Image (cartoon, rainbow, N blue to C red):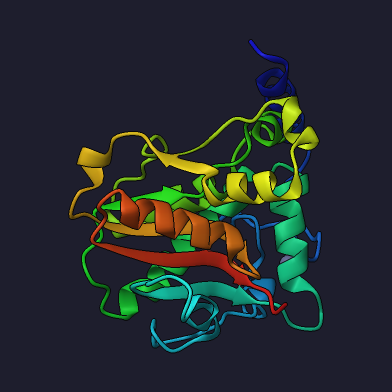
Length: 234
Ligand SMILES: [Zn+2]
């Protein structure tokens, strides 16, 4: 077993011996509550963007890359709830919370009439980062969405190229060129004519997501939608 996964295993094991508390207010959860207590649930800063083509996330990509639909589950507001949830997901290895975010967002999306989706694809994490963290938070979010929307999650179609140390010695121009094709599609035939929901944890400038959308469309995807746990203004 590699160090990364062993580390994750022990941290997960440790969690078993601690009573379950709400990730936001730290009060003990009652039997049916999961991760967030019912009081804090009511305070979640949901975006409630009903139009998938008229919202701040869709606008991030306007004029840059053609995106089908776009949206985020949460927005950043004062009080720091979204920040706290993302911190829990990214730095405290709370995989189940990321899955729950996906499940809850799917319930919102089901209320809007979604066009058909063939695959949900999470933005691949840098291999080194995934090893440190033990899991890819975007993949966990994708799994929650997939279960509730009954759409398969694919983690091998879109991949991040691995770079060597020599990368740092390259000129600025060479590095820029590299960023433009950081992502590759493994099996373009499988993507041909497919509708994709691309997901990530946060969208800010949208640079990474833009690169992914471009790669997927070039490989033959028919439509690419972009959905994230949260949207942060620049
Ligand atoms: Zn709470």
